[in-house]
Length: 606
Image 1 (spheres, rainbow, N blue to C red):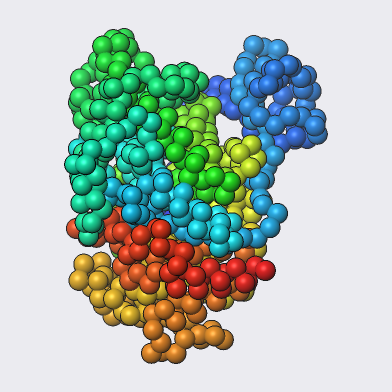
Image 2 (image 1 turned 120 degrees about the horizontal axis):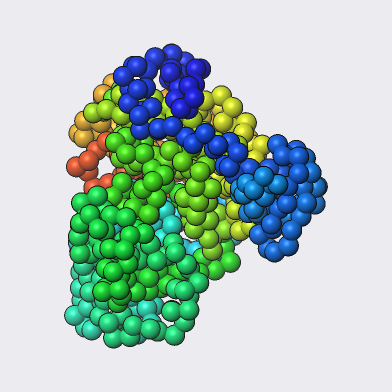
């Protein structure tokens, strides 16, 4: 593999181990976007090290994060405190020193848990979408069944406008949460009229989640509640302690209300978050900025009540919308004119373009990794777990620099530094970290993950080896939101839907289905070929239960016998991310399929 000084790989290896050469024009286009780092970057960029590590400085003074100073002469002491410090050298240089434990925090005992798409987990008191009160119900059910965690989809915020983004994986920010997940009855001061409750019931009865309608309803109730009391007890003090990140988010959201959720289209004086124009705008619209900060206060409070003392593993998307809040606040660190995606592979001959602008590696270092640190910390906060979507992005990302994803190349990232930061944040939050290492994984990635205590993610539908041979430091599961459910695969309905959608060739899809079903039918307790879907679901989880992995994860979709997966990649006209579970969350505990899966996985860990 040849990597140039811009961090661009001139070739790439596909899943079939075939080498492909990147067009020179593509390389030149990406070089122009990356640009030239400052000449003194290596002398000013952060140092990420472990206690006892040698440093490339002979003598320095470290100003400790928690106060005090320590002299450093060539290496860190074995008892050097963990944290984000400032290293100052005699020649006047000052740089960030991140001292990391090197390995993520891991629980002492194995556990099993439920994976749930929260928007789909509606309850009797919901308003058309699963919310944080519904998460509390799921969590309480899980605890009663002996589960150790719940895994949820990304809960990050999107633009506040009337047209809501359906995909949880293209948020406006990776630091703040989506007010769609607020339970109105739990908002202090909210008073719902009989008409409000009728509207909520009507939304809850719809066949599909309608985010636009849900947000229109919830926003109206939330706005009038806030307008009636701008300063509820505790809010202003909480807001002040959140600092600049929350101010940036609330400002972006308020401006987006007025000018749309794509900041490059805003008036010129509002495009720079540190400009006099933005400060003047905020002064003139203080109450609307406060409204969006207040929503985050409510979310913080309701999430704490939802998670309780159970580990809730939150999902971190690979990127954000190019017009969103994080892209606005960190526009100097993001690449323009390119986007993150995936090269052509066996699953998609055209590759994938996910639409998110990538961080420029050297600019990320020059920014003291702040965008990365804040995203990791915020997603991990208050819940005890983190799943990093496309964890290979810590090592390299496919930058799309043309009209489609075939015109792209891999760009390298400082993975050792980034893994060290993840380990430090995990240690501080006592949060388990799972890396989604599915698809084409280059050599060395899983070894680096294991070294840093990042759990691998192993799926029955992806692995050739039986679950009993999977690694211990992993989360083991059958499927994900992008793959067939057990019932959908067993009945063949998933194949039929993909053929109708045009997302695959029928012959290949049937071969794939046959290969996946072999996992079940060849197992010692595999179901008969004419068994019911419920029997297939039970057999699949008995097979999963043989994995020695630290975490065993089951989807509520599978336990409930759902045939339609949450998302079919590439099927833009399908109701992706909008399909609710068929059973209200209050009735999950009494559902036979849910009870069966809980018993099978629980028995495996006793």
